[in-house]
Image 1: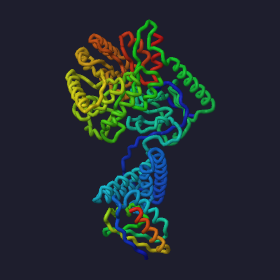
Image 2 (image 1 turned 180 degrees about the horizontal axis):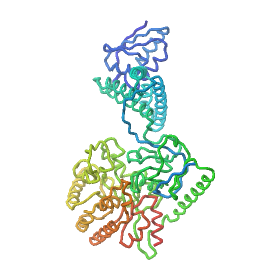
Image 3 (image 1 turned 135 degrees about the horizontal axis):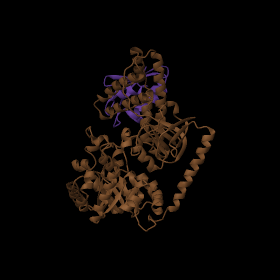
Image 4 (image 1 turned 135 degrees about the vertical axis):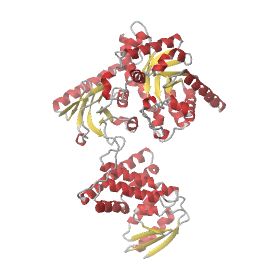
Amino acid sequence: MSKFTYVVTDEVGIHGRPAGVLVKKSAEFKSNITISCKGKSADAKRIMGVMSLGAKKGDTVEVTIEGEDEAAAAKALEEFFKENF
Amino acid sequence: MLKFSGKSVLPGVAIGKMYIFKKQEYTLVKEKVADAEAEITRFHDACEKGKAQLDKLYEKTLADVGEEHAAIFEVHKMMMEDLDYLEAIEAMIREESCNAEYAVTTTGDTFADTFASMDDDYFKARSADVLDISRRIVRVLAGIKEAGIDSDEPVIIVADDLTPSETVQMDKSKILAFVTRYGSQNSHTAILARSMNLPSLINTNIELLDEFDGKIAVVDSFHDTLIVNPDENTMRIAEADLKRWKDDLAALDELIGQENVTRDGRKVNVYANIGNVEDLPKVLKNDAGGIGLFRSEFVYLGSKDYPTEDEQFEAYRQVVEGMGGKKVIIRTLDIGADKQADYFHLDHEENPAMGLRAIRICLERMEVFKTQLRAIYRASAFGKCSIMFPMIISVWEIKKIKEIVEVVKKELTAEGHAIGEVELGIMIETPAAVMMSDELAKEVEFFSIGTNDLTQYTLAIDRQNECINRFYDSHHPAVLKMIQMTIDNGHKNGIWVGICGELASDLTLTETFMDMGIDELSVSPTYVLPLRKKIREI
């Protein structure tokens, strides 16, 4: 299992289109990817769940990755978060 | 081959595929389904179709306005693929054996509520996205087409009847003809058909069956017929008729640049009626002497909220400037009755034709009126501009209007805006205005007779009601006497009088109007040349 935390810096947070891009990115990996924020968690491959987290600027998200390609996924996603959120 | 009959609103020929246009109304009902798995398959098929629509919207928006605006459709598509959403709907169909429409709507509402209850506006707004995709799926399930025309080639639109808000969303270059089951010569569809020169039929005895969608058909409004799946022979005749009709239209082009003058030397102005900035090229192409009626409703009906002064100014300026010094008569807002815009929040009325409409709205909602007047006066600096006010019944109304106009002019001048000389006139479309025309003529610079409403109010016949068509007589002597009275009272007071209603393009009345002393006839752009031809033959 791999894990990382990230503090959202994007003004509008993880919603709409950026959430869509995250879901697409997550779908590239076989591992189960879970995002938690403010006591709620969601499957990173499901856009409605990701958006319903309501992750905004200043919120801390925890990303948990579990599966055969977890190392690669964790690395790619951590970079992705820094770039996009 | 199937033959149907209707009533022609504009004689001509069209050959093309039929497009069955159904109303977008859907009433949700919960129903039991026998086979839940089959219902789930139906739901999946609808999602696929919905996603295909979103792909098209994405491509169209990308090409029209760019990636930034198109992205939302990509997000919608992903939402439609979201497993939480799909699984919740499937579970509901399975557990309750309910119809997919019900499951989609209910699940969509639940998801939307989740977003709506979030404390951030950005996330709250996602609630509308969920509702939007759910509605899209339900529309597909219920067989309701999207607004507008979903076709790559021009088609024959077949519908019950069409409202202004439906046609406003249609790409006009995709329409070959209208065929409607209801409607009358004065219904919105008929007027639009004439203004676009589309051979069209109303009161057609055709059912809106899905199997007709995409079938080849011939609209022959010379003979009031619609032929579906024409055989070879019929097709050959139709093609020849189509060519002859187009040739006749081309022959009219020779009248461009000629005067509107009778053989005994009487002249009349022939102007055009328009309802949109996009109509301007047709006005110029058909050599109209001016614009006798610029309906300003499009700025309101094509908008989700009150159009701003700048938006309106831009539209009016384009037309006023585009006419290059020829007169443009802008009619102020004429909504209410059969033309509505949601954001006006007009209360439901038992009798909208006699309710809060046109100038009555303007005098009740001063800010809306002033915004429009400001926009028109600003546009008047760019050419020759006149304003006319609809639905006048009393002298005090025009006095009040003139007070407001003075305030607007003062304000604009003080703000440093240039304004031109603007002629003020009124529509004569109520029997009251006709009876008061001697007094009203002393207050304004011209009259324009709106024969559609004048006829409806004089004969007490609802022009949208096809059941009483046989009682409706557009040549009724009462109406013709009213026109004569208006012209006489106008001339007595030294002002000019025109007709901008549908009657102006009735060529069987042209000679009568000339004898009555009419000064101007304003017709759909495509009628300018046929009318000129008629005048020159008198």
